[in-house]
Amino acid sequence: MNMILVDGVEVKKQFLKICEDIQSILLKSVHEYVEKTASEMKERINKIIDTLKEKAENEEKIVELEKLIDKIEKEEDRKLKAEFIRLK
Image 1: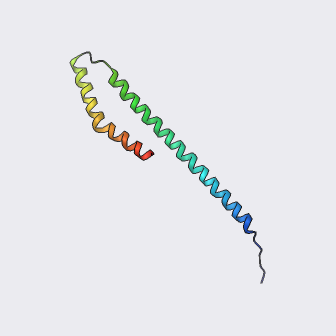
Image 2: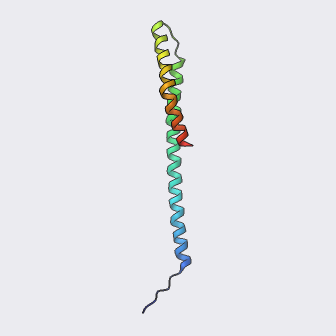
Image 3: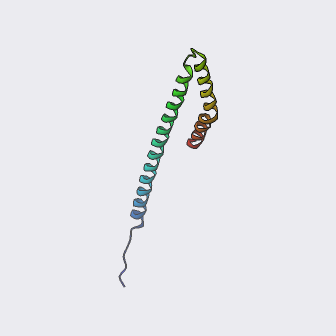
């Protein structure tokens, strides 16, 4: 019967290197995802702020802004909070 001598230290070192590479890839991917999502959230918030800064020059505009505020309170606020919690 032939026996093969395996150097366990080298196998462990290779396995450790593979695990470290996987960890690095995962960390990079998570970082990129968080950066992208945070940037998109910031952009959405800035658009909302810019829209709300508009002056109501007539009654139609006031009604339009009030509807937008209601929509933001009902939909956007909930979506943004859910995304933020998911990123934590």
